[in-house]
Figure 1 (cartoon, helix red, strand yellow):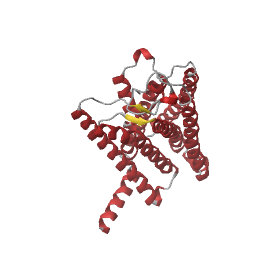
Figure 2 (cartoon, rainbow, N blue to C red; figure 1 turned 90 degrees about the horizontal axis):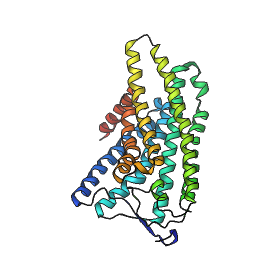
Figure 3 (cartoon, helix red, strand yellow; figure 1 turned 135 degrees about the vertical axis):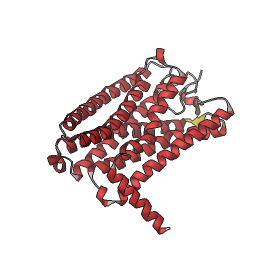
Length: 310
């Protein structure tokens, strides 16, 4: 048995013990990572370049792209490097840093998605009050609140988790450092303190989820009153993918942190972690920009101008 003072590194869960499958995992994650970098990078560049897109909706979209880039960069590169080098190691400090930044970015993204649902509600249901309710100062405060909530949550959970004595070895049953998996290594009843903290955080997150659902219900009610069938179809085609991705992100995240031990298994934990930590950063650029004509037009202009300069 070991304690936390003697642990200098952790062992992450490999995707496979077979060298060929490790290389396949590296290639797959590399493709997803590059897609996330390209998609989110194009969104940030396009919105920054086109002054017509300097509106609250696109301001929040830039923040979402930044959070997505940070979240996937916190976990995926280390997992890729381990597969390429056929190792499982991550240092104790590296694990703590990974937990902190991952929580900061994931929690920040969750609160930002809540803010974005409010933005869509005001734009569709109360368009005449849009400039009043979502002025530039309000947008800055809302974005800062999302990042601030992420920072405070990450600081609290990371400090609490890594202050626990660990005596169940150093093997983390996940491809990145995740709090529920680290808690399994604790031999002290003090881990219940962090567990209750997680429960409180999830309960608060559930309130935000209810707010998101209520916002979209109001949006759908407003959309159904649109006389044009084409207009209704366009609004539903835009909003439904947003709600689907948000629901998948939230439900898998809550399941990962609050699932009972009886339904826990390495393969299930791995799948859930990939769904809530890797898929959204790669899919969000498509969901939030593919059906956005203004963003697509601005991106087309940017690419055309770039090729003209070559």
